[in-house]
Amino acid sequence: MALELIGAFRGMDPSVLDQLEIDWMNCLQSLAMGGQSYAIAGRNMTRANLAEVKMIIAEIALAKGRISGGGFSAGGSFGGDNSIPFPSFSAPTTFAS
Image (cartoon, rainbow, N blue to C red; front, side):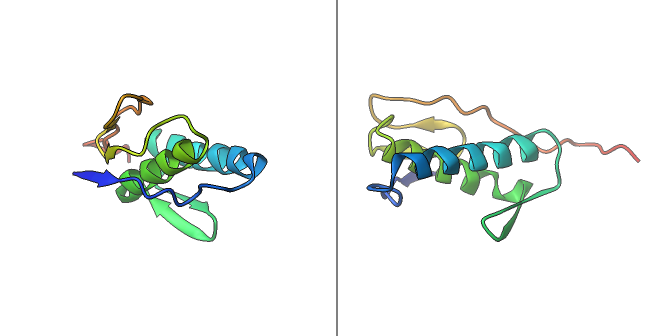
């Protein structure tokens, strides 16, 4: 499913964007490495929110000028000439008891 980047963070202070990027990358990493949930910005994100988390990171990257405003695939790629690799994550099929 391709989504269009909307520029939600354009014009924000670069230091704020840097901190947002760190926070959302920590969220992505936590969820991808087996965490069941992660609280950020007053919201509780779960593995089901991985596509949303990656979309927010893409919006931050757009605001920082690292990517163009092309389409975004929640599976891990961007449209346009620029790209930022996002690994594809999936929930484990078995859980330790």
